[in-house]
Length: 312
Length: 259
Image (cartoon, rainbow over all chains, first blue to last red; front, side, top):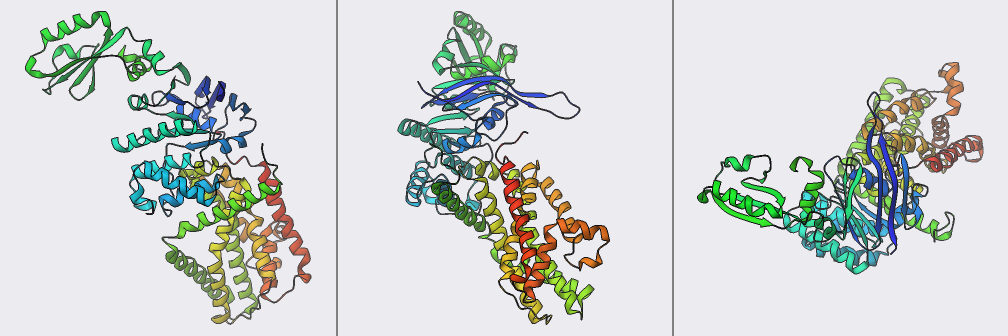
């Protein structure tokens, strides 16, 4: 299996005068095989964006090596733009260009002919459902729409690797689904390696082939979603959805967490599920409960187990 | 396989990128070009009138210094101020990351920024000259020396602008830095007044500043001077341009940042 990226012992230290150095990345080791969708998850401040910015050549590592298709890109950073499309967290502000103009502009700078760039721009715009706005200036777009167009710029020219930092942040559910579908299709159609950072673990689970979880600047877990889920397969999550605003005392104990307003969950070993159900049905007023369900572990559960230490 | 930097393919791609980037930069004015023209022209003409009232009234020699000083300042703005500030501003937004992760050369990127800046200066420069000729009755006989000087002058300071832009952490710092450097290059050099008016020390130091030669060549150009009689100044200005581009550009790591 060929590798798109290999990251070895990557360290990035931010030095602030008068303060102790901050290790944003502290010995990251990663291998991203070619042609897969690779998810990078982690809590805020874990060092994901710092890692991403180093692998796309926007930030110099303090120490360590990054190989892109076997080439040491710390030594030869100019190799990266020819092979990697990148979307950062922030919007690309080109207010005076239309969506189609920005995409064609990007494609041309990636070496495409005008005709090929227009054809790909039309197709991408259509796939995310923005065809009706393709010729309008970006100044007239909503923030979410500009974000979508910004994501599309990274796909122009079909680079073999695409790196995306939170591509679905602040998007509505339909737009998010369009982006996931598009990324899935691009990966399957062109064999593009896609590396993406996201907090939306639940949705990303649909498309990622492999995952690395980063916390405090280190990779704390890595594997396929099924491998990671399997590591907590002996656990189940019990969810209780209430009809009433006041939570009964049993749901306020340390083992339970309010996931959303009125929805409480507790992850326990499978062997303890029946006793837990027995306990809560004895305690809860049936009129106050809308739903009780036992859920098999998802990737998000694994993620929470690994990085959400306070939940354990 | 990577293309050699001087191969025809590389040069063709570089030129094509330059044209695209130049167009992209100019399109920034698409929604506000009338306001931009009004602002740039008004600002330039008002400055000219102000200087004329203060030092040049009734004195054709002085008004020539005012006009060429003003033009030199505009060119300096294009080559250095705008470049430093544009790059700094791009860093504030995702625009810089966008460009830095595209397979374009540093030279195409910087040249397009300077090129668009020079083109934006053109209307106000033309208006200044027209105003000086028609309203202030300054006898101006522009010739080919003028565009050559404008081009060399605009690019003679891009190295400084690029260094400020790339190494400033924010757009604001870039703006402050360029505004500190700019007056040194225009007010402590014989740009608005003859070299003899400067203290001895500045007369010596100003020889190492390109604006000195830009102003002198512009004065010669507007007075009908020929290229052949201005070779030494042209050679020095060309040298500044080569140093600016040839020495600074290769050393700039424009994509990656340490912090």
